[in-house]
Length: 360
Image (cartoon, rainbow, N blue to C red):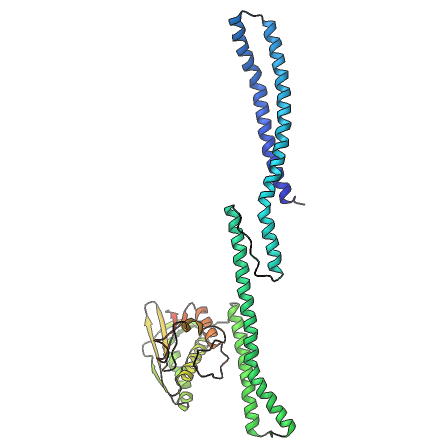
């Protein structure tokens, strides 16, 4: 079993002390008598003393030296041991703080922060733990918000279904085509919300299923617009499409069609009755599709927020969408190594959504 860190630190300090002490002891023990004898010989020679006195002095010196080294070694060992314990505690105190904070964060207290110690390495570790706590707190906040928004989105169709069912039980409504059609619409809205949430989950986890193949983005745009032009015309929306030149790319046509469908639906909803323009063109090493509406427009602070889950632009008409279509659309675009961005001259001046993909 591996020893604990305090024991290993103390052992490391003790090992360094032992090596230093042993080296000093051997060096002094070997050199001191020889040097002493040399110096004593020179001194005695000058003083005309006998060698017997020099030998006795030398033995006395060696005995004193051994005793002094022994006492010094014991004192050094005690002092070094105390210093090793104090140093180990100083090193381990920030680690104990990090461990305590990590346990509290694991228990759900994401507001806990580790105080920054003086050592740069420990300060970097504390900063990483604090960053992790902040990220987890943000994730938890978004999770709670998402649950509330999903519940809100489900409440409207569920309230409608509950009202129809209770009305039919009480005899207020009859099971005619109109009632069943209204109930079917609410059920479709719930199913669409469930499908969108499933796609959103796969997008957040990076598990969007893609089947990219070489294709012509301009052709995908033309076919998608042709399929939805009659539906938009019934809503009073004129669809203008400019996608002539071939735009080769590698993409999942079905997923890109899903993105374009979402953009067209949102543009038609924002425009009401007016014109929606779609333009496909090459742009450097990329190909792009721009969908422009004549709707309520976007404020500068909304250009990124429209891609957040369930975000509704102030002043926009509330449609039947789930509120996460643009989130999923941007996820699909980025899964293709492209992007989806919003542009607008301001509220009341329309908006443009630009889908960009790498050119083949």
